Length: 480
Image (cartoon, rainbow, N blue to C red; front, side, top):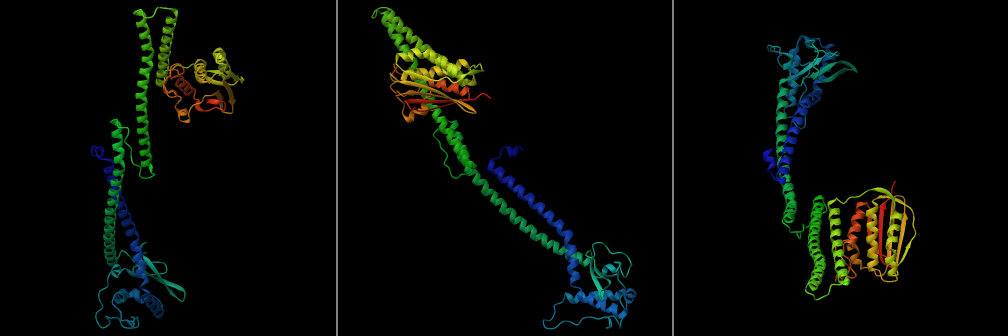
């Protein structure tokens, strides 16, 4: 295990594939050897008996001539010699245009004028024997082994016995063993060749995988070192390419996050420095007597302090939202009533700019935080009030369906460029790049709107309004 832990992935893959192929070759060798040993003996017996047709025909003729097997029972050596003679002729090369004379029992046996050889035991007769119709040995009367192969003998369609062959005979076992060794050698050569080929293929696969994983490793090291511009070249459409795309997207997101953080620091320092500079300058002028102390100067200083305090509060709220520590008091509430309450509070300010508010209350309940939702509507109202031209219009509709409640917030001209629609909720983003403080707020109001909407599992999208300005779609999940 210690060695495996320190191996590279491609080395582990090569090792596992090689071991798996080696085990498979061993299992196949064992299985092939087992099946061969079990089936080859039976096959050999059947094939041997199939070549004894001439011997079987002569045995039938002998049975017909002598009206039974009695003479063979009295002289079993005669059957042994006949079996030997037939099988010797079977393995000798034969002339092409004539057949050798068949031995016949009417002819004198080879040992007729000499002393007959001593009788040999039954299992020495090339494994051949004659059986009675009851499948008992003609010479010993004993039943035959189960593994013996049988060739029926018929006299005018009457079963008169069997010619049997015992595969476990000594000579058959030698043939069996020789053929088995030959097959084993062939199988070993084939297995070793396949194993070498499979190891070579495993090595090629491991090298290919290592080549594919190397750019991924380099990319992760580059990201950890802060190089977010490194990109992995895509080669195909497989899972490794999907991983490469994800790493490339991660690098792009990290680069964007880095730029946003840098811009965030610049913007925050600018936002804080502006009111502090104004306060410092006016206080210095008052201290040096350049400007007389008056209620107008006090009011100006107070407005700058309020602006600075509001910016700090907004930053604190967003930091809480990012950390997930922004508190919410969930309850069932009427969305229309919450909206109506906010619009009543800002109605006077809208009237000063002669902006008409069109809203038809439509009672619908959702699960939410009443105070946070009021802050959401108030921020949207202040955004409309700040950027909508005089004599404009604000139209609010509530659309309810089976699973959601959508608030459509539309105001009149001016609108924003298409490229800026998706950036409106970015922190400290202003369409007015000059950052004019009279028309532009802190740039955090819509970011707070998005944070509150996200906490309510609501979607927030911006588009162009039919009235010529900006349109917001805020979709809340409907209460079951």
